[in-house]
Length: 444
Image 1 (cartoon, rainbow, N blue to C red):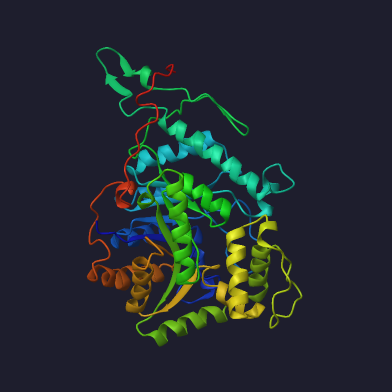
Image 2: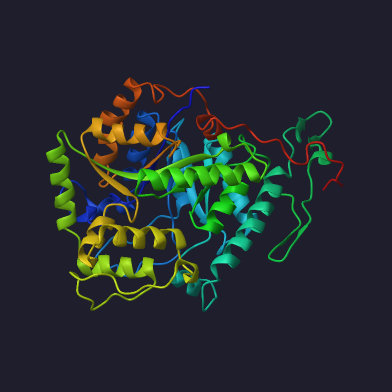
């Protein structure tokens, strides 16, 4: 069977580079303009991309003085994007640490209906300590505790999505029967974190369940992905690291009794595109020159969980704790510290390297060179596709769609038109059957 490359557009403000808002190719005022995001969605659909993705956080960042912190609630924004597109998938982040299963399941089911089956959920456990104080807590739960809650959260959400069987709606106007209540089930969940009776108050969506996406490469994150994920957003800097992650995830998916071919791995890549390699590198240098060191230092301090304020920028990182003792984003912490040690980077050099993708790989080059990197990772067992992170928007996404996608198509790696209707069909994944379909549970 011929493998199909999968491409997701990761949309963030006016670009993924932290200095994009200062560059003349962008207009930072557009970050609260829905028309900006609708334009991006149309561009992604023009390129027949599988999906677009909106990340989310539940607090203001560490230094809003120097960068954009205005972020729409993603599910609300996805509803507006669904209205102006017909095919491209729509993925949003929702945290399992600071939400409840019932209203999360209800919102995603609603959007799946509204979009005709194009919705996906990026499941995160939240990594920032500052989010806790917005939700009646003084401290962030421990890393392992967040993943235990996440597992039960997703179990409950799946039960809720399945609580209406596909043929539960009867619409018999003559007999006055709207739904067959033998096919509408209580979930009756009682666990350590949640007590949920159900059923969900919206029928099963066109996809049965939203596509389940996971972002996290720590040991807990990989184990979680092996159990639940259908697509994985990840970050690796080298081909060898990408191959290692890909092989280990597939091994754990198989051990969990699932088919590894039905779990798609999409590393992040931030493509800086130019007509020539020199043009691309010049654009990358322009963006790096616009980085505000105070902001970048605060971002790096947040990743490492260590206050770097006052340290010499042209010196090395200080001694850092072991990854296992870190309670924030463990996989990103490991990636950043490995990068600094492997290349012996100063703090100034490190914040420059991270400015374009926060640890994701930044590649500057021509459309053909970008396509070369995508093909290499795809054919050498490191990826099933890519999470495309344009450094500036909308131009960076348009450049990718108009110049890189045609190269991938010419090489036979990517579709020329949509062949399916739902997000699951784009990713080549089956529509799951309700767990209650053949049950004899007491009806609701």
